[in-house]
Image (cartoon, rainbow, N blue to C red; front, top):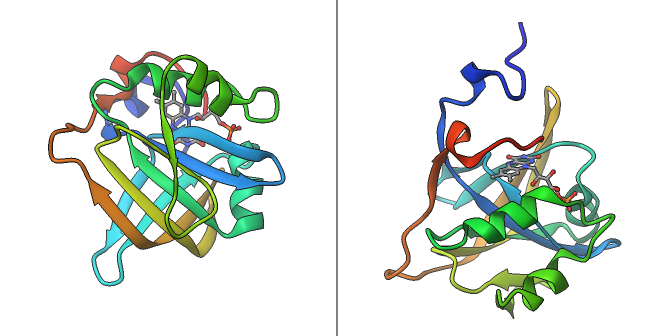
Length: 165
Ligand SMILES: Cc1cc2nc3c(=O)[nH]c(=O)nc-3n(C[C@H](O)[C@H](O)[C@H](O)COP(=O)(O)O)c2cc1C
């Protein structure tokens, strides 16, 4: 059976929000991804599950690397913009900079990272697996820094409002 988008049974899961940064044919982009999960300690592996139409998919396939920035408690507006608009239609990074959000150049990969996130992880693409109607990109961690002062934003889908994967 299906467990559909916006069904109350799909909205009970507790999660964090990965702000996925990527560069490639669509320029430098950011999207929100609640389906961001730590999979392995050694090597460090993190999975992000993306709908096939996301601009981010083309960027990750092209450059084979991406950034994962765990959204801080004070960054919910950033996540709404990153998750509410397509990089095909909008330059979200420029818009976010205009709103005062800051980015820095990743150390080991060619993209931007989000300043003020609770965790910043630079990943190279380890594996891509299509699972149902989403594509799981597994990233191998090549650098990870955290800010002990920043708390991670925890949500259930029912309290973040409605959005469409
Ligand atoms: C809080 C939040 C969490 C989201 N989680 C996911 C997710 O796990 N997977 C996904 O494919 N889309 C998710 N989305 C939707 C994408 O972020 C959204 O479709 C975005 O516009 C895609 O950006 P892009 O096309 O520029 O890559 C989420 C949106 C929000 C607001």
